[in-house]
Image (cartoon, rainbow, N blue to C red; front, side):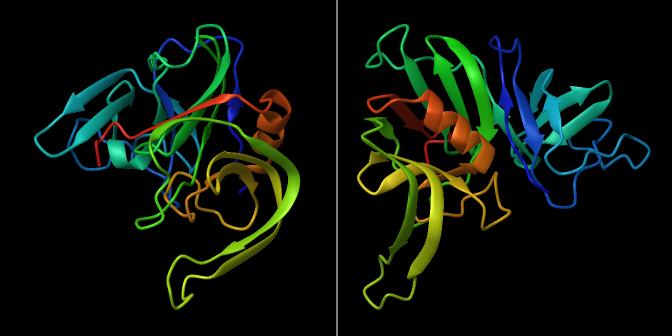
Length: 218
C-alpha cells in the first residue's frame, strides 16, 4: 500500500485529509452517528475534502460529503490556512509539520506546493515543536541509536533515503520500513513517504525553515 502525498499548483480552498485506519472507514450520516454501511466505503489513504466541522463535547466530526461524516481521529488533515510564523520571512520556502494531525505541508511563501502524511516521534522521543532550519542533508544514511540507559530501545535502519536534519538528531526523511504513516512511530524524526522525501530533498536547500507545531497543546 505505497502511499505518497500530493503536489499542488495552488493552495486548496478547504481542509483535506487522508483516511488513516488500516481497515478504512464508512462515514456516518450524522456527526456521532453509527457508521453507514450503505455509504461509500473509503479505503485507507483515500484523500477526502473537509466541507464542514462539527464538535461535540468529546469529539470532532468532519463532513466529507453530503450526509457523510467521519470522526476526526480517522483522518490526517491538512489545514490550508495555517499562518506562517512571524519569524519566517515572507516569500521563502518553508515546511509546516502538524504533530497532532501527523501531516506535513511545504510552502513557497503562502502557496502550498506539497502535502503528505508523516510519522513523527513517540512519547519519550518527541519531535519538538519550534522553528528550525534544515541544517544538513544526506542522500542516504544509516541510522541507529538508543535513548534508554539499558539500550532496550536500540534501533538500526540501513540506507535511510533523503535525510534532512533540522533539530539536533531529528530529521525529515523518506521511510520504507513501516506502514504506519499518519501515526506517531519514530524516535523523533519526521518520517514521510520515499517519493515525497525525494521531492522535498530536491526542493528544500539547506537553510529552509521548518515550523513544527502541535495545535492540541499536548
